[in-house]
Length: 394
Ligand code: PMP
Image (cartoon, rainbow, N blue to C red; front, top):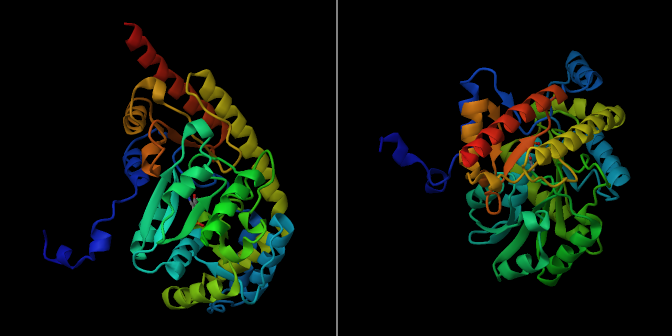
C-alpha cells in the first residue's frame, strides 16, 4: 500500500468502480465499435435550448443563482410537473435544481439517512444507488427482481426485507437497465406497504417522459404518497441534455429544506447558463421531446423484434431507452457474453450483472443510437450467436 492510499476513507476504499466503465474503457481502445453501451441520447440538445444558454451569457448572467435554483425555472418545473404528471409542488419551498439527477439522488439519500438506516434498493438498477446509500452511512438492502415477472417489484418481496431500521425504498420506473414500467395498480400495491410500515420513497423518475405505450404514473399521485415521496427528475434524458448537468427534486417542504442544506454547502447552486437553457426547454422544447420519443419507440420495436428473431429472448419494455434481452440460451455469463461480443464482433453492450441482483443472464442494450447503428449491431450480434450455435452442433 502506498503512503497516500492509507489516507483514503474506508467507505470509499471499499467501493467498487462502476462495472459499466470497464467496458467503455475497453471499447475506447478499439476501432469500428458499434456501441449500444451508453445511457445517453444520441441527439444533440435542440438549438433553441442551446441558444437560450448562449443568450444568457451574452446578457451577462454569469453569477450564482439562488441555492434552490432560478425561481423562473422552479416555476416552470412546478407547472411542468403539474401538467405532465399531475403532481403539485411549490416553486418556493418544494423544488430544488441540482447538478443532474445524480446530485438530486445524493442529497435525497443523505437528507434522510442516519448511520445504520436501511434503504431498500430494487435491482437490477442504476449503478449509483447502493454506493450513494453506503457513502451516506446507510445500509443498502437489495431486492432482485426477475425476468419472469418482467422485472416488476413484487409486493411480497418488498415486505420480506422490511425491518425496524428500514427508512426508505428507492424506486426507478421506467427502469434503467430493464426499461420496465409500473402501472398504477402495481404502484398501488407498493404504496400500501410503504404506508403500512411508515416508510419514504425516493422515486427516480428521470425516464418518466420516455414512456412509449402508456403515460407514466408518478407514485406521488397515489393517495397519501405525496408526503412520503421525494421525486427525482432532470433534463438529461428527455431533453437530450446530459452534459448540461441539470436535474431537480420535488418533495414536501421539510424534506426539501433538509436537502437544500446539503445542496447549499456542497454545491451552492446548479450551473447558471444551464438553468436558463432549461427554462427554454420547458417553455418550448416539448415538440422536440415528442419527436425524439417517436424515434426511440421505432428503435425499441425494431430492436426487440430483431433480438427475438436471432434467438435472444427479449420482452418489450414500456420505457427508458434500454432493452434487456436474456442471454441464458448461450450458456455464457453476462460478462463473458459482453466481453466476447466486444472482442469478436466489436459491439459494446453492458452485462446485466453490473446492475445488481437479478441482472445476471441478461445484457443491457441502449437504443439511444441511430437506426443504422442498431441494424449493424443486430447483424453482428446475429453472427455472434450463429457461430455459437454452429459450435454446439459441431
Ligand atoms: N438515474 C438513472 C436511472 C439514470 O439512468 C441516470 C443516468 N444514466 C441518472 C439517474 C443520472 O442522470 P443525470 O445525468 O441527470 O445525472
